[in-house]
Image (cartoon, rainbow, N blue to C red; front, top):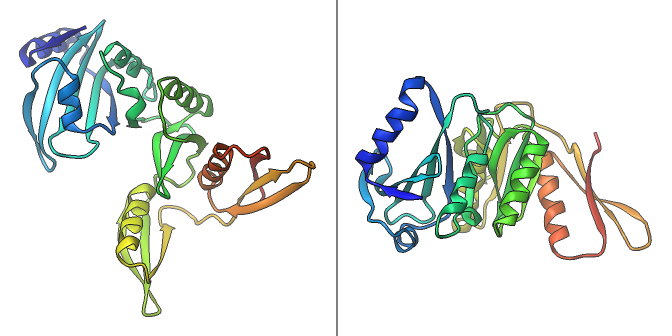
Amino acid sequence: MNWLKPKEFFELWEKRYKPKGLFFDCFAWFNIDSDDMVSKIPANPGEESIDGLGEAFEWYAEIGDRLVIIRTMIGSEGSTSVSIPMDIKQTNDDWRALKVLESLPFNMLHKLSWVRSQGNGDYSLFYRMKGVTYSVFSNTSKDNSEELKNYLESRNHTLLMGTALTESFNDVWAGYREQNGKKVCVCRYGDRSSVDLFLYEDQIKNKEYKYEMVCEGSAQETEKWGLFRLDDNDNTFLMQKFNYHVDARMEEIEYQAKGHHQTYWVENVS
């Protein structure tokens, strides 16, 4: 691999992609701080001002036949991104371009937190941290999601991840706080995780209030999914019902991670 100066990088980019007219990139975020990136990359970064975000360090590289841009927001926690131009003929939910990062002199893939996808499949890859559920890779097939999960685990990824139906996760959601007997809308976002995180942080400051998330982009589901347990005596128990598949799956995965001997699984109970 070669670390490139910006001029060298964009000369190569123009030769490889501009003649084709159209291209898109495999774009991903990683939970890696700027100081960590500076200490790992053996090349001096450039600096760029990103509208609405702040100052960033940038590195340009050629790895095999791929061009790679690494950007990290200066002073921001866990704000490193990677952009890898891809041929327009590749599918728009293909994450495999990220495998080129194996050639870096350090492991980034164990810190991956999100990959852009413009697919139209029914499944997504999720993880949950401090009670907040996040999407890693959305709107793809079940097999593609599972393949990405297995690949990241092979790169020593430490988050508990699981494949689940996307359902309403990427629709418009609103967060409500119940105060003085009334529900007050405190936030509204175009995805569930942003509302989930807002309410989590607000509840830390206001423990006396009750909070609720409501999907406004589609009809509210009603306890459609059940989490089941099979005990050591072959008895089956319905442990809990959930509105959304992802919540049932995250509970299932967390129970399995505790090392219990019982078997857990999710079924449609509607």
